[in-house]
Length: 467
Ligand code: HEM
Image 1 (cartoon, rainbow, N blue to C red):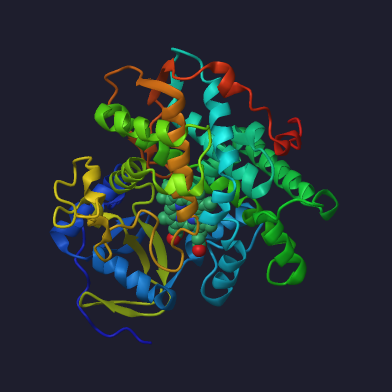
Image 2 (image 1 turned 180 degrees about the vertical axis):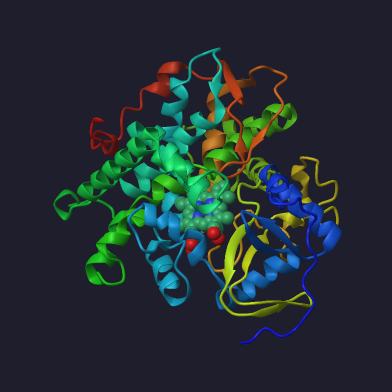
């Protein structure tokens, strides 16, 4: 379709040469919210020598949900990321029918019901990790939580413990995202010896996961996500060729790192700053974890925990926007957005608008009571993105966050270190608590031998010693 003449969307104020890059480099979500309030639901920004059209507000989220598969394309956003993993495509970079097929293949392994079936392991892993935290010493929060969630996901969805690979995985994924997806860092970082070593280790992990799923090693094992993907590869090797296996198979090791890990970090900070909420959540966790495990039913009833998690996802979204390319020209809010245009859908702008979330800067879990249900207004709550690529693991993530955080507060009493620490958000590659966010274990709430005696699950014994 040929673009019709229509007025150009208004532009955000920008500096010569750098455009809006500086303004966007800090809190990009706050920048988009300010521009939405000034300019409305469509505006242009300039960054990285490129022009982007930003779509924002509930109307943008509803549009992407309804029309995204027709008008928007993901390929350009993710293809360079895939390339670094030796692949031509992945679920994130696919569009249309092939994307729907890939999503279907991975749906069961990333589902809420899959984690429900593995809650016992999720809790055992959390307890084991918490038991390793020293008493009264500063512990970097993000890393401690990334360790727990990546261990959970890797173990249950891919049958291999990523423990010995965690630091390399973090370097690899975060550098790649910053250099190839968000473009906040120069590509030259990928030539450093540290990055190269990380890449080599990640390739090693990939080989380990594939070997662990050799049919000879799987007799009697419950199929996991990797089994499902390898089955698709065998049935239709043209659709999922060997060369595209790496991003798919490593998904469980990547998916939780900067998402569940950062969200649990933000949630922990909010709890430590709101002792009343921490007390309520601890009482709820103590009642539910009486027998050191949780059933799916018990997770569903972690009411305070879920509401703290929802408010964390609203106030501290780890993905304030998604990037797309316009595949087919469309009209939005009175403007024509032509094919080929780079687009940001600023999905979380409504999170900060008082007409939907009164006093949006206040951490208030009462928003989610049945009487208020502020997040249920159409298009206003989108921490998991919107449209055809909306997070496939959202249900999984909600359960993982609730089970992990409930177990932590049940096991230990934590304190900020230093006590007056004020959160700083590091924007690269996605918003996360900064490295100075540390906590200490003020007290173990239960006998140490009860928390440390769970033993290693069988999957950990499959992990090779690092070379
Ligand atoms: C707080 C936790 C999480 C948040 C906020 C989150 C957010 C997101 C967002 C915003 C997207 C869309 C990306 C885009 O459109 O370009 C996405 C995609 C995705 N997420 Fe999550 N995610 C979380 C946890 C997880 C977990 C735990 C898993 C796996 C169990 C997962 C699996 C996926 C997958 C497979 C996709 C790609 C979907 C597709 O391309 O169709 N996510 N996530």
